[in-house]
Length: 229
Image 1 (cartoon, rainbow, N blue to C red):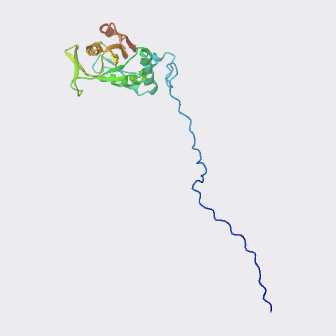
Image 2 (image 1 turned 45 degrees about the vertical axis):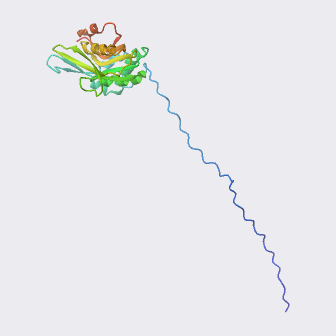
Image 3 (image 1 turned 30 degrees about the vertical axis):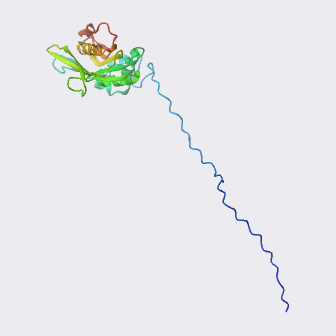
């Protein structure tokens, strides 16, 4: 028996690739792009939802609640909390004050305690100005300047930090109500005492029958809403 050597053809071995440290990886997937949120630019003449702004200030009066015999019999109290809770109404108030004073180059908006604190910071933001609180005595921690003013029976006082207003700064004084004008006049004197300039005195509501403007002569006095009773 003859042994025959079988010659088998072996397949060629595949070369083993060497690691390549410079090998590039596929690019990372692109992140989803989101549209930019446009900067809000308030428009004074645009309608604000629930309030038809054909005559905007008159429409604001419908948002103010009239409470008779408060805080004592014979007094009709104008309650602005019903205006404040309405987003469109509150925005209209701030825009109305801003529109009147936006060309006055205001550096500081000064708010009188307590309801002036509601409007003054929002108006300061709208005007690109700072905010300074004026408070009743013994409420502020640092060195203060004070001013006293007459009431119907007795006197009262206001205080402000001594370093709150710099010499020559233009100050807009803001409060919710112009009645007899005594509080606003006192605040204006205090601004002058520290070297500031009163750029204006603004109010949301004015009781015209009390003639408060007589104590504020020489200033740019502005009110959004007027009541004659």
